[in-house]
Image (cartoon, rainbow, N blue to C red; front, side, top):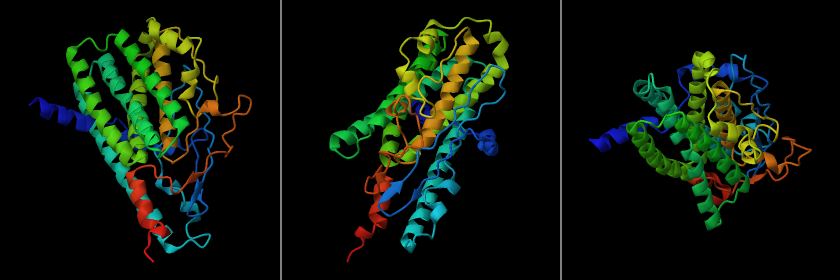
Length: 358
């Protein structure tokens, strides 16, 4: 009986969210502030791409809407703009079509799981906001150290070394851990059932994320984008519904230390869409705390979207302090022989000209 409950809850709680409303409003995400990254293939060996600057939204108390990054759109898939150009052989076009189909399948699975988990959470935590936030934050931090685990394995085997990915993912897990500490200080973990449920889901979620990341990092990153998107929407609705009440309540001590402390290196590190030191929160009350948690989730969405293009992530601290320029292409070319996951390796083995018997 217990195993059945766990399997049911996990199947619907592994990701959280781009729900119906999010998908209907995708068009509104196409604003000047959103990421525009359209890399194209210049040869069958190298992927030449630009890190495109993302102008992070400046959030004010009186703002009514904050946009987060949309999922990778198939129309912007690498190589589409030059389809049929440069004398590309027919097998390359077939490979592009196959990859678009794979992306569509991966995202469909993630969105289905997202829609399912929303229904379960809405049922279990209809009037228990802090408990819901505790469960969400316990789960939301899992993917980042799952990614780190796989990256360390790849590095140990000599397959794939990405120092910037390790730095950014650790900073993301550090940020989510402080969200969790805030919810615990607010009493979100008071009920043993919530602790039991969240912790056991997290263990299973970790195992599944490791396997998914080894299979297809792109799918795993989209998975996490769904989780962060749901978290953003949940916090956004909460502060709009209870904003006046939250402004009268004091901020937890752990939140004040995290957001206004003297060492904010890791706080800047996970926000890959903005320059370091460009965001410095002011925490006067509980409303400010939830406002900044919501904004953190928006930054996670942008980072997870960028990660869905192989080699498209760079630590904000990798840029010179006086030259934070996303148009710099140095060190960004990724060899086509560099497999990022099992799905990618199989595709390259099948479509590569060298794989054709003579």
